[in-house]
Image 1 (tube, rainbow, N blue to C red):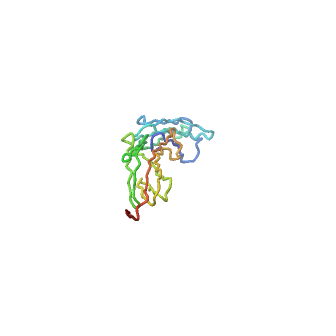
Image 2 (cartoon, rainbow, N blue to C red):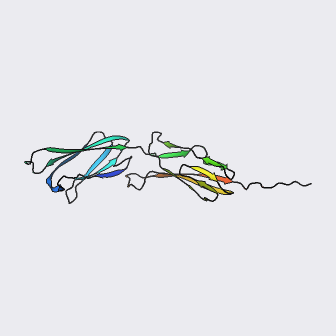
Image 3 (cartoon, helix red, strand yellow):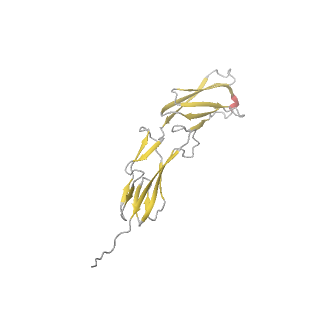
Length: 193
């Protein structure tokens, strides 16, 4: 199913006798709302495959009608309903607790949880991955929590992915980077006159 905006899927009818040629071409696709676009692709096999692209957040029911061939069989109208729930993609995000021109400093052993917000605020599909330029200096987990491990300076990168390798009709990624420094700790101290 297309489970979020701009996702696409194919709706393939399955016939009880396995023979798509029993359908005489009178197959229709209707929708309860206007949340998806439906395009019928009739391949050589006459299977009446529909391509569905999700356009907006919400719940959509796709009603598929087919009339059996030959109609003298029982002249019945057969149908199937498919209901899909479409999530809203985040199109932008920000790191809220470190400005992009700010460098934070952590001591070895310190942790710091990054906080993010998404646009639109009603987004329910927010796929962000985190990475570090040097995981020997500062590590970062899947939730954006960094841990200082050794002296040095790293770049932390957060990437909003809305493609998910699902063949979206629309695809964008956005990155945010932040700088983190772990200073060399003072291990001894002397004074002289």
